[in-house]
Structures are given as C-alpha cells and as structure tokens.
Amino acid sequence: MLGVHARLPAPAARGRCGVHKSRASHLRTRTREGRLTVEIVLIAPRQVPARELPYRPWRRPVFPPLALLTVAALTPPGHKVSLIDEGVQGLPDDLEADLVGITAATTTAPRAYEIADALRRRGVRVVLGGIHATALPEEAAQHADAVVIGEAEGLWPQVVADAAAGELKKFYRNTGLPELAGLPAPRRDLINAKKYVLPNTAQSTRGCPFDCAYCSVTAFFGRTYRTRPVDEVMDEVLTMPPGPVAFIDDNIMGNPRYARELFARLRDAGRKWCSQASVTMLKTPDLIASAAESGCVLLFVGLETLSQQNLDAVGKHINTVEEYKRLVKVLHDHGVAIVGSFMFGLDDDDPDVFDRTVEFALDARIDASLMSILTPLPGTRLYAELERQGRIFDRDWSHYDGAHATFRPAKMTPDQLVEGLIRAVRSFYSGWSIVRRMFQPLGLSLVYWVTNLRWRRYAISWANARERLAVAEAVAGGAGTPPMST
Ligand code: B12
Ligand code: SF4
Image (cartoon, rainbow, N blue to C red; front, side):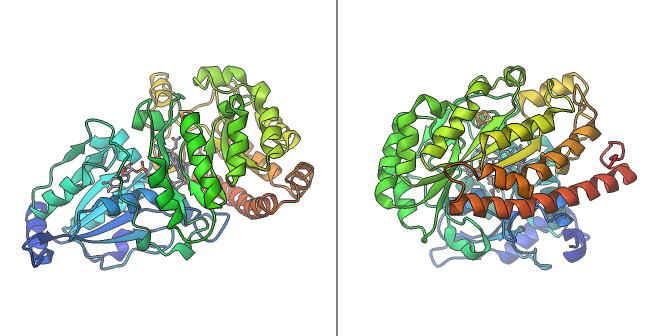
C-alpha cells in the first residue's frame, strides 16, 4: 500500500501558520446558535510492518480502537466527528478536516508521524495523543500542532474549543487522573462492527496496582487502579449488539470487591465475556468461580517467564512460577480458557528458553499463547535501565512490536532471540501441539478450537513472514542485526 505521502495531494507551498488560519476559516462554519463547528477526523494508524505481513489471525482486526471511540464521545456537541481505522480501511487521498486527532502506541508511532507530517504539509491541524505521545511528548510535538499528554477526559473539549478559536496550544496535560464516573459511552456508531472480530469492547477499570519494569501501564496511569461505576459499565454492556464482550482492562480482578459486584451483574446479563487478569486471582478462588458463572470464557494472563530470577529482575513479584500449572488447572476446572503471554530476552534467558517455555505451555495445557520479545518501551523503567547499560541498538519504533530484538540480550544474540521466537510460535501452534493440549476439560470446547485453529493460521503465516522480513532487514542493514541463520 502506498504511504500517505504519495496518496495525499502535494503539500501546499505556503507557510504553516498561515495555512492553518486560512484553511480553518475556510472549513469552519457557524451553527445556528453561532458556535463554531469543527470538522474532526480521528485516525488509528496501522502497524507499519503489517503492510508486508499477514500479522492477523483473522482478516479483520480483533478490536476497534476504543481510545478514539472514547475521544469521539468526549467531543462537545455541535462538531462533526468521523473515524478512520487504517486496520480496516485506507486513508482517502483527499482527506478534508479542520482537525485530525491521531492515536499511537509506540509501534504505530512512525506511521502516525508519517500521516501527521503529510496532513500538516497540506495545512490540516493535527493533534497526537495516546500512550507513545504521553511517553515522549517532545518527540510527538515535532509532528503535531498539539499533543495531548495522558487521558483525554477533561482535555479534549478544550482542545476542540481552542482549535475552533484558532488558538491551539502545543501541549495539553492532565494534572490528575480523571474521574471515571459519568464518562460518555464510546461512539460505537462510528465504526462498522462487522469489520472486527470482537467489536464489543469496554473498560470497567483503568490502570494496574502493580509496577512491572517493562510495562507502560504504570508509566502512563501511575500506580493507580480506578474503577467505573458498575451501573454505568452495565448500561454500556446492555446496549451493545449481541455477541461476546471484551473487557480490555489491564486486570479485571485488581479490586476483588469491585470485581464481585461487576460479575454478579454480568451474570444477570447473560453475556459471554473475556478479559485480562493476573496470577494473583489464585488468592481469590471464589472470584474465579464467580467470573465463570457470570459468563467469562477466556482470560489473558501475563505469565511472562518460567524464571523466578527474571520475574524478580523486572519487579513482577506477583507471579510465582510454581503456581502457573495450578492456575491453568483451576481456570479449566471452571470452564475458563487461558491465553498465557510469555516474553523472551530477559537477562536470565539463554538459547534454550524457547524450547523450555513451549514444553511447559504444552505440558500445562495452556489454551493459547502470545509469545513476544521483551521490548524496552519508552517511559518504562526497563527502557531507562537498558539505556543506561548502553544495550538498546534499535530505535525504529515500528520495531517495538514484540517481534523484533531492539536491545542486546544478556545470554544470547539478538539474532537468536528472533529465531527462537519464530521457532517457539511455530512449535506452540503445530498440529501436534494443538492435539496434545486438547487433553484437558476445555479440549473439546468451541473456544479451544476456534482460538487454536484461527491463531494457528495467524501464527504460522506470521512466523513465515517474520522470518522473511528478518532476512530482508538484515540484507538492508535496517534492523541492525546480523542475518538469520535459517
Ligand atoms: C486493547 C489493547 C490492545 C489491542 C489493540 C486494540 C486497539 N485496536 O486499540 C490489541 C490486543 C490488538 C493490542 C495489541 C498490542 N498491544 Co496492546 N493494549 C491494549 C490495552 C490493554 C488497552 C488499550 C485501550 O484501548 N484502552 C482503552 C482506551 C480508552 O484508553 P487509551 O488507549 O489509554 O486512550 C486514552 C488516552 O491514551 C487518550 N488517547 C489515546 N489516543 C488518543 C488520541 C487523541 C487524539 C487524544 C486526544 C487522546 C488519546 O485518550 C483515551 C481516553 O482517555 C493496553 C493497556 C492500556 N491500559 O492502555 C495495551 C497496550 C496499549 N498494548 C501494548 C502493546 C505493547 C501491544 C503490542 C505491541 C503487543 C504485542 N506484543 O503484540 C500490540 C501492538 C498493537 C498495535 N498495533 O498497537 C502496550 C503499549 C505500550 C506502548 N508504549 O506502546 C500497552 C500499554 C500494554 C502494556 N502493558 O504496556 N493491544
Ligand atoms: S501486572 Fe500487567 S498491567 Fe500490571 S504493571 Fe505488571 S505487566 Fe503491567
């Protein structure tokens, strides 16, 4: 697919500020009440390597961009808002807007900047927000007219008002953490639900009470855990179209009392749901039972590594490796599938870590797995530490996708890390592995087979494509790592 540079009309040869003013006054119109109406387009950029790789298990992305549906909902009435998710549609050549808001995680930041630069050359004002812009606001500011640092609640209406008045400030920063009561419902009407595997997404909590060194969540939200009023969450759930609900919380059981209340209400709603939770749930078995009774069919759990030394080094003290198998069993006994996430490249990982981890995951009968390479995300303690040690060698943010080695691991080469990941993914999703893992209470369930067969297709094509890309990057010298040996 062509980049936005090529597809958007040629940049205007006028000074930027002048262009902003003339364009804004051209497009803004007055409502009958005399307010200025701003035409806003919100953009979720695609992940750059996804241009080349069949990264997704399904043709459709799994989730819609809830961040932008939320920003759209926060837009004061009277303005026109539309949304473009590059994961499902291309950017129009002649995108017209008074104000464009772009979200970016670290791995999508380069694409966000590419789009922002092209639009700004045409005189469109661009606001960048999200986790990466919050971690590196000065970097984002080089590509934007304004940067929203932190959550949009309490800031976005001001951004829109300033844009309408032609007085955008460079930075908008939330001084505290916004109250989660009374949030408007995300603007789900702006997306075509059919384009997503799980269009019904919601958040019941924000943040995480823990503080793992590699994680952006605490860096972004602080070490806080906020809950939304259960009534409001349920209002949202009950108005969603039929189908399962994905709570994209970081830890849906982070506050057991709140979780109990939420699960009791979900039970009455009769919806199937999935979410993320931590190993600490083992301490509250009644909560696991109540989650299952309320419709929970799948939980994503950060198991991360089988080395307690690694866990200690990254401050993930909540995980005890010895409990992993028991956790899988308890979840299975309650009919809940587990997606275990593992990271490779921690300091105690040697070249055998890949085979050991896959063997463990097969033995424990984990239903599905997300395996990735440890990534020093900017703003995290891990980034600061590896930077201090001079071990980060790749700062192309598009490589910060968990599939690239961006730093020198302690006990293997970056090359071995990428190779090992590809091998581990292939091995976990091999036909033999799927059959071996099915000997457990959920082995004949729809969730098990749909997850595995779909994910297998994704994983194998991902692994093949990732391998090709690694070779291409090595030839071009782009990734900074030597060629793969396979
Ligand atoms: C759901 C989710 C996903 C979904 C993506 C869904 C989607 N289409 O957006 C899936 C499963 C696909 C996914 C994949 C990955 N994810 Co993810 N994911 C999350 C999760 C759990 C929730 C994000 C979310 O939607 N929150 C709800 C919205 C409402 O909150 P929000 O995004 O923070 O948005 C608010 C503000 O940031 C701000 N804002 C955001 N954008 C904008 C834009 C504008 C213009 C404005 C004004 C404001 C604004 O306003 C919003 C409302 O307050 C977060 C964890 C987290 N708590 O953020 C991780 C997280 C974003 N993911 C992360 C990672 C690392 C990944 C992967 C690389 C994992 C992997 N190894 O493959 C991939 C990369 C995918 C990609 N292309 O970006 C990291 C990102 C860190 C970073 N620095 O980039 C996070 C923070 C998790 C972590 N533990 O560190 N992820
Ligand atoms: S438990 Fe999960 S969400 Fe919480 S800080 Fe650790 S990695 Fe991040």
